[in-house]
Amino acid sequence: MRKTVSHTFSPFIPKGAVILILGTMPSPRSRHIGFYYGHPQNRFWKALAGVFDEAVPVTIDEQKSFLTRHKIALWDTLASCEIDGADDSSIRHPVPNDIAAVLKQYPIRAVFTTGTKATEFYRRLIQPETGIEALPLPSPSPANCRYYTLETLTEAYRIIRNYTEL
Image (cartoon, rainbow, N blue to C red; front, side, top):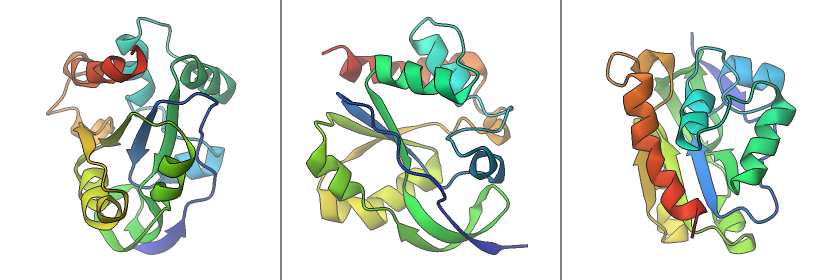
């Protein structure tokens, strides 16, 4: 059953962030814990850890420290929408976050989107205002496991290093 949800926590933008990774909308689990990619089966943190050859950050403090070390900011394309659970394909009435304000305020070199819907919403609702193209990444959702193993997901995310190590 679809219900209207709002993004319930702030973007995470560490000092010196050079890339911005955008999801679509936090899952119910992420909204509950108050941070990004919080579902234990989501492979985002495992893929990023693989990209940087580090241990998987488990706690929110470890995740924030990891992002800070690698100059990665996180947010989502949507401020609110109607959605059925965590099913991005069910989204209706999307309202975008003000990504343009972040891009004006911080020295972001590249914007990445995680998944088809995040990419679609960025291109349709946000890119016309920012003029900055987003680089699409595969969704780290467990629903995407049949298309991307953890190894192939990590390999796809390796492009991030091209922008964090300039």
